[in-house]
Amino acid sequence: PSIMANGTIAFDTLSTSGQIGSTLNKSVKTAHSCDTDYIVSGSTKMYAHITQATPVVNNSLNSSSHTDSGTGVSDIAFINNMFDQFFTSTTGGRNTGNYVHFTVLSADSSTSQARAQSLINANTGEDSADLSIQVVSDLA
Image (cartoon, rainbow, N blue to C red; front, side, top):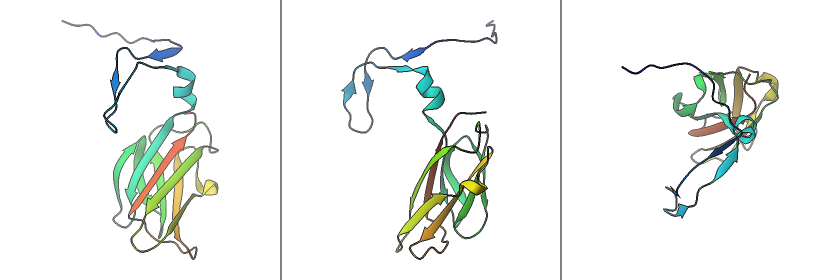
């Protein structure tokens, strides 16, 4: 029988051994290492790909739910909260026939959710066919 114990693993650098293949360009790369501070502070802590009109979450990380909060407005709840509401986010998307502008409404974002709004060029809310959002921050 195997015994599982809870504990802590502490390290400053995460390293790979051998060669790593890239699925995008099919090339082989040599081994790399990464300072763990980058993983903790500099990597994406939440992402979601949403079809707003349906609404449905197609793919996500650290996202527990999506709330349709009006035409073109999406609230994405975090599973693990952010350290504070001053996180950095990037959004983007696509809509058929219209140029769509995306922005995160920081006044309505919090440690437990991000709010994204999609607007057509006349600053009118419109549901996006493909809304993508990612958040970079420290977790609480």
